[in-house]
Image (cartoon, rainbow, N blue to C red):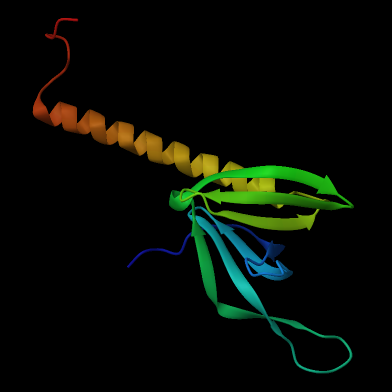
Length: 141
């Protein structure tokens, strides 16, 4: 059983749909050490003030499948940015410019994840080399 990933940020983002009209849709986004989870907004009950309800089912954008956070643009108080997946697929987002900006937090979390992966790969190489008994000292250049 795996432990739940640590939540680094939780809040609202708008994601551009991939359909013909490319509408902006509100998403509840949860940034964790492993990636970004996107929850759909369900229309709340009636009344004067519509409330936001979030689906329990989430689409997950894992850092292992992300390449970069790109194309940052600032317009009319909003920050527009693109998450580029390893497959080349681009996913567009926007958020308010005030406060800590989502694109920077996602980019930093992605860099942290990739660095941890690189350290782990280096450790594994070192351990496998040590296990095989090669220290490199007796080898000629």
